[in-house]
Amino acid sequence: MQDCLFCKIVNKEIPSSIVYEDGEILAFKDINPVAPVHILVIPKRHISSLVDLKEEDETIIGKIYGVINKIAKQEKIAEDGFRVIVNCGENGGQEVKHLHFHLIGGKKLSTKICN
Ligand code: AMP
Ligand code: ZN
Image 1 (spheres, rainbow, N blue to C red):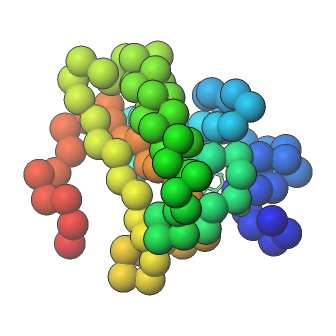
Image 2 (cartoon, protein in one colour):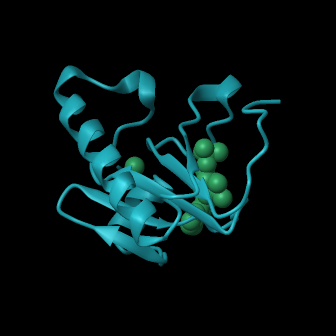
């Protein structure tokens, strides 16, 4: 997708700090981390947001959670715990319109999940 920041990251037109990559999924460090571990996990194929998911996208969502599981172990946050966040749309605070899963951990997070 032209003019999509994360598609450009997928295509290596914009540099990123990649922590995981396979044929369908890319994970890279968030440029503005809110915790010691803050990684974005995305489908390589452009899906704009959670509300744009189609039935055929359900398989990739399952795979993304599998990758999150792997990265959490790789980053040594699996035991202490972590949070996964998907912002969706205007009210959800989604800034980049390419579906992404925030994997956040490495410190005790606030019990408030929204504000
Ligand atoms: P959201 O508000 O859910 O759309 O999250 C977008 C995230 O992308 C934010 O946490 C940004 O810090 C992050 N971000 C923006 N540009 C880049 C970039 N070039 N590389 C890595 N992360 C980025
Ligand atoms: Zn995109």
